Every structure is written in structure tokens, then in C-alpha cells.
Image (cartoon, one colour):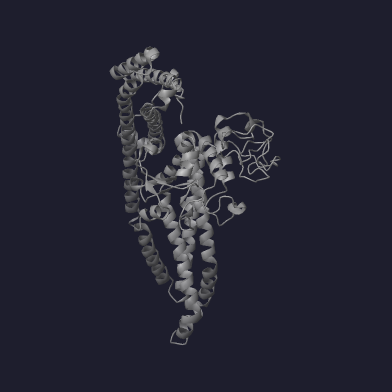
Length: 376
Length: 182
């Protein structure tokens, strides 16, 4: 039912979104508009051509940017390093800002101390507010009945493969195709899947999606996200407070008895002003970058759990062509999903402010792990 | 200056404790993974009689397939030693595969809700067995890497952390049962 309006690329076999005229994978023109005959036999549903490993991908002309064969263990390790580095950078921004603001008022140490107190308060609030909120926002229900037996089995299978306790399983009754995981620790994790996804994915693809979610759970990405989000929030709050203070509060205070300290702090003050303007932006860019690294990492780890990267690649292709909208979608939870529900088809989804890497790029990397690389 | 050696000693002890605990954790993970395989194998033994019970009335002409499944289950249950058991389990997987293939030929069987859910359960259990073995082997690899690489190998050899064996499948059972994985 999806293949009817989702044109398959005649060059590489990638399944494109309806109405596309250039293949998202290899940039080849798609030629025949949807509805008319395709030059190549289109796969019966979504991305089954990827799973079958049939000829089209192999015969394809090399894409513009050939990707070498990827090993999922190496990919996962690389992403862990990258996200750790980015996290350190994010922390450095926070650190610098706190010190500079403190310096502007005469005491860098106190400024740093106060910013850490702020961080702790925000962090505790975010940490203890739990995953039940996320589940209820998106209208998830516990997957109990007989009709969800396969889903529960697949979740248990992947939990065994990942070596984590089986999470609670939830279903979101909606047409859109998406999934997310929540929970601070693997022991209290939960996985939610939309019914649209269940209806259109075969078992292999479902395994890939669940494996991706359990990879998030296992590497505690939800915790990672909370930490990053709180840092970004603290930076924004600090900058805001400082900028307001600089323009309203300081005027009154500088006329007081602080004349001697004021001159020495001038440099600090300018630095703090500059940082207060730039830091929130930098922090947000770093946060998004971390989020994208974690997505790549979860993809690579999922390939490791299922030993079948093409299953997830095919699921992503189906989600891309089928739509990933979810009830209650919002900016606060967009990073949790396997594909960002807010900007699936957005051509700028590779932009710096996106929580997810472009889905086409993810598919290409997964296919490279599965050995379906046009390069070799 | 005087407390530099002290700091060094503390750091060394902390590293030692962390490394030792890591090895213990890996070793326990391997044992746990091994039990997980057993749990799933038992589940399969329990499911098979149910499936046979449900399908036997429909399959008047396929008694041979059913008998072979039951025999293979019995052989796997009574197999002694890891090698014999691996062989028997491989055979059981093979016979189950042929049973599923037979079920495909009977439309009224495929439509039967009981058969469908039992088939799903068996497919799930089959997958769980292989994922549990995969996890076991991954755990063994992590553990063996740890006890063979510098510097943890010193701790490992001092406390007799022996390398663990991988789970090897029979050549015949290497293929995944393609019993309509839907």
C-alpha cells in the first residue's frame, strides 16, 4: 500500500517519499512520476529490496559520496568518543560562562559556584520528573492484548540480544510510523511504538527499530539527553540573567562603593557580555550535535544487536515514505523518537539545529554496514 | 611533595579494584547469559507439545513430521554434554522448520488462531535462543579480551580468571529457521 506512491529509485533501489523527483540516496532523477510504471520493478512494499539484497543496489552507479564498509563496533565506538567530546565542549561553554559572569561581578569562583547550584536544581527537576509524562503526552497505552504478542516477543528478543532487562512495551494508536524509548535506567525503561509502524513493518524491520530503541536505553541516552538539555537550559538562564542584570541592575550598583574593583572587571565584563550572547547558541548547536551522534550510535549498536543492519535501513526507508507524525509531537520530546516527527521530510533536516541526522544518510551508513555499498 | 607516593598508591589501588570488579562482572555476565539460553531452550521444550497437540488433528497425512519433532525434542531433552546437546538442538530446529513448512500447506491450519499464536511464540523463542547465544558469545569475547590484554591480564593471571569457551553451532544448524518470519 505504500509502494503505490513511494517511487523506488531506478539506480540504487532506495524508496523515496511520494512526489520526490530526485533520489534521496544517490541524487539520480527518479524519472517516472508516481502512479506510472517504474523503469525497474518496484519492490512490493517499502524497502523489501534492501532486505532481499537483490541486484539493484549492486549494479548501481557509485553514489556521489561513496561510503566505505563500516563495522558496527567501530562505528559505535567512534560515536561514543564523539559524543563524549561534544559533551566536554558543552560543559566547557557552561564553565566559561559561569566564570566570566562571576568575574564581571568581581569573583569568578562565586559565579562558578552559583551556576553549579543552578545546574543541580534544574538537573534534579528534570531527572525526577520521570518518563510517565512523556508516555502520557503521546497517548501511549500498555501493549497487553493478543494482537501485540509479536511486538512483545520482538522486544524480549532484542532485550536478550542487548543484554538489558526487558522494558515495558507501549503502543501509540496512530497512523504515523514512529517509536521512542524513555526511562532513566535500563531497569525502568519503556519502549513505545505506533500502530502505524506495527502495521507496515515486517518482523525483521521491527527488530531493527526496537534494537535502535534498546540501544538508546542501554547507552542511557535518555540520561545523556537530560544532562545535555539541562546544561543548555542553565547556559540560557545564566546568559539571560546576566544580560538583564548588566543592563538594569549593574547601573545602580556601579555608582556604589565598588569603584576600585570595577576597573579590573571591565575585561571580564566584556567577555561575559560576549559569552552571554554567543554561549546559548553554541550550547544549542552542541546539544543538537550530540543528539545526532547518539542517533548514529544507536543505529550502529542496533546493527550489532540484530546482526542485520539492512532490517533497520529498510524500516527507516519505510518510515521516510510513510510519515512519522505522532500525536502530541513537540519540540520537548522530538529527540526521543527514532525519526524526528516534526521534520521528517524537511530538506534542511541535515541542518545544524536538527536532533536527528538526515534519514537518508542514516540509511546509507546502515547499508554500508550491511555490505550493500555501491563503492565496493 | 611528600604525599605524591601516597596519591600514586591510592590511584593504583583504585585502578586495581575497578579492574578486578570489571572482570568479575564480565564473568558473571557470561554465566547469566548461559542460563538465559537454558531458559529459552526449556520454553521451547514446553511449547512443542502444545503445538503438536493443536496441529495433529489437521495433519492426518503428516504424522511422520510430527513424530520426528517429538523424537527430536526427546533427544534434545536427554542429551548429555554440551556438544551432544548442541547437536540435538540443531536437529530439533531443523524438524521444527519442516513442521512450519508443512503448516504452510494447510490453509485451515494457518487460519487457526491457536496455531498462529503458537507459531509466533515458537518463532520468538527460536529467535531468543539465537540472540541469547549471540549475547553469550559477545560476553565471552569481551571477557576474553579483558583477561588477555594489558594491563588487566596481570590481574587475570594472578586470580586465575580462565578464558571461557565460545558457543559453537553445528554446521547444519547455522542457518536461521526461515519459518515465515512474519
